[in-house]
Image 1: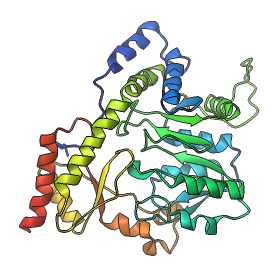
Image 2 (image 1 turned 60 degrees about the vertical axis):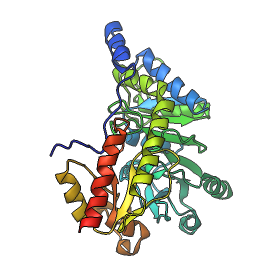
Image 3 (image 1 turned 90 degrees about the vertical axis):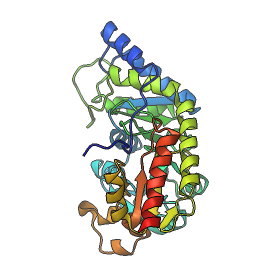
Image 4 (image 1 turned 120 degrees about the horizontal axis):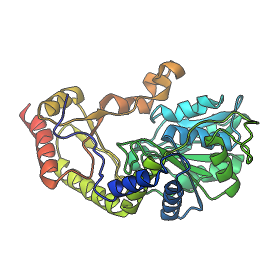
Length: 352
């Protein structure tokens, strides 16, 4: 079904075409393209972090981060219940076991419940900044210090939240705050970790390229064309974030006081505008008929077939999953678009 108001749409009105054309013109389209280093440095500089290591996806970034930190079979990683499944999969890909912690009222990991899940096998904590809300990183970093754990931040939805963990991982999928179509990037201040991330993403080739590979690694490389798009996006990140703040403000104002709608806590950066609706499925059908796309909240990890646990119905993450959705959220939305969307939400709840 085609929607007049899709949930997301990339903002490609900067120098994306210029940079991609230049990359094709000079022939550097592979993972050896110098534009990749330009993107890595630009994004690292914006975040005041020393090193950026680009890769093929946000999931790849998480997997590389865990591997670079030495996470493997027999280890455990603390992961939120409320997240996209890629967070848990990255742990599973390493051979380690994700251990899930329920969410708080802001959908982020409930930091008060992390310590009870720590065992002698725990190696790392993976906070996820859900929909652009910053986790309580002070508390998480304190727990990590007390238990000698590493911290991998899943910032797939949180470009603009500056990292404090050992490694922060960002997605560049087409629906993210900035995009390369596909792609990801890891940020770290540790030069040895940065070197290991780069080594693992490129098949662990030795310096002499002798085809003797001493460890299991990946082809998780980014292409020059993807990096060209991503670089142009980083150059406009401040503008993109400012526009998204205005979108959040207009939704807050337009949706205030509607019976049956519960607004969610504010976001540090706006990825998607999320809310709760008492008659969610009926509302979604009504909005779809008006050309407005919506998406559901994430389902708890313990409800997923690969991680199924019988306690999933009692989770707070599940209660949010049952009535949560998000509205179109992208920089192409005009004030008139948002007025139309909020008017349809209000119409549904006042006319029925």
